Image (tube, rainbow, N blue to C red):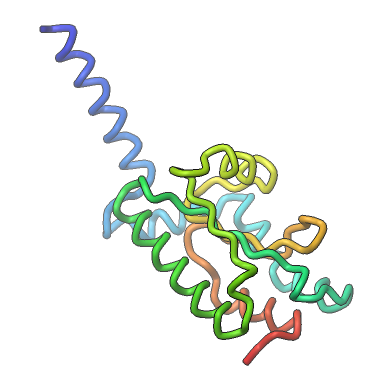
Length: 163
């Protein structure tokens, strides 16, 4: 009985630690967003204007661009909400532009191998994450947690697709 109690205590402590690290409370959402300002994220987000300029200068066709949203249907409530927000925003935006078929939604809970491959290949650390890839798989845009709507729409403009 004591062994079971110890195991339950350890499991609860681990769950609590994960919950705290994920920032899974309404009050800590901003702290969670700020925590994402790691060198990886700030480097990728800081490059969005450069990427947009590069796309314009190399004449990447929006038809060859792939939009990938990595979500999870089995995660904490705050991450579920953020996944739904991002999915809704992208579906509406891309449908408006006639690009809805270019969106690939990868659910970590259902396609773990594919999601893990994307995490490793594109140095993604959080769910949800959003990638815009050219025809060769090169990252044109990357956001983790929140999608930077302004930067994303600047990228779409540079691809010649705004309406």
